[in-house]
Image (tube, rainbow, N blue to C red; front, side, top):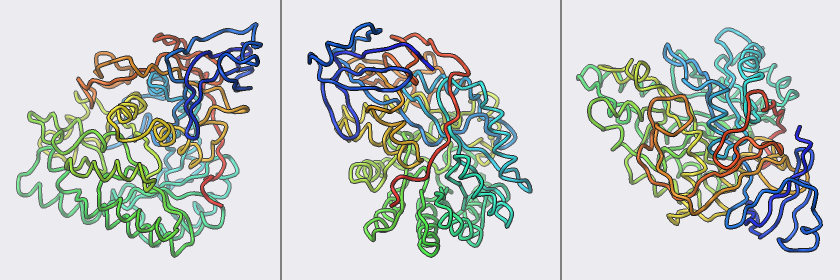
Length: 468
């Protein structure tokens, strides 16, 4: 806990609700007060460390509600540890992550949570929480859901994809949703028709279609839309809310929009890779397309407009990264000659806040919407608001000083993620994180990392705050 009294002076404070030229007083790791810059109140804040934020934005630290540090997948592991991944997040202006603990098949939810707690303990540079992946829905795991909610794990992820690994059938999904309706939890769904996709994978490989671009072709947008429709209807039957992760296809956005227009508690997230990249990247020659293999897959460029529109109209509420990095060398290469063996996942935890600021510059979203989809909405969705996701009296002093005029070029040469490529290599961005505080402690100070493993603490979460 930081005992230092800090004043951030002269910046434009931007939250999801407001923009104001204000000074921010921080004590004991919390925001204590805001006062108009130049006012008598602000002038009275003396005997404090001062951070000059003039001509800068003062924004809440980002909340990334979807990361996979050290995740086992396809015979290898995501290349970022909780230490390297949370350090990279801090560099990028993200001060809280919600990662995924995985129930071992045939084991208990508790066993999975304990394993992931141990991985993260003492390693994180920023605060963290966990969702629970249910890979084995049965009577005992359904009962366990209630106990996990009491410990601050309030969201449970299931899959209509990955048969034999994570897939739950419709009956299991319905049971989990019924349990969530009973205990106030939130079911998160990876919505793709995995059984149909497996048929298309087998047929593509039999035709000799082995390159990375076929990963996108077999995981059809219609199969994402079908599964999205199905999980919405199952949630409706259960009377439960549902949150659809990594929405990538226009047809899936349309399913969410239709349900929301009916007043159903249906939510959706998308990720920067779907907003900025496309099947053109998957088709890059010499196996370079493998760098962009993730599921749901990248879509043709024309889907991007629907995703941006969904973010503007609140059909999509959250932008998370689904950060799950695998090095090109030695990991992505496992799929040379067979796209189905390429580990699914992309790096991005460090780039999200900057890419979304670029979206403000490009006119896709407003400044306040940037903060909403990157900070406030994920904090509300996952029961962390207003401790996280805003700058207000009583909130944790997770604060980013952001220079909206600085220019940078994204590159693996300069990023801090533990991965040997950047999905956005060479992309020029306007805007850059200058200084980051986590609970009042400087973790990035004017472009220098001053944080440490073990500063970050586990955040027990409440239930989804969008539900009455």
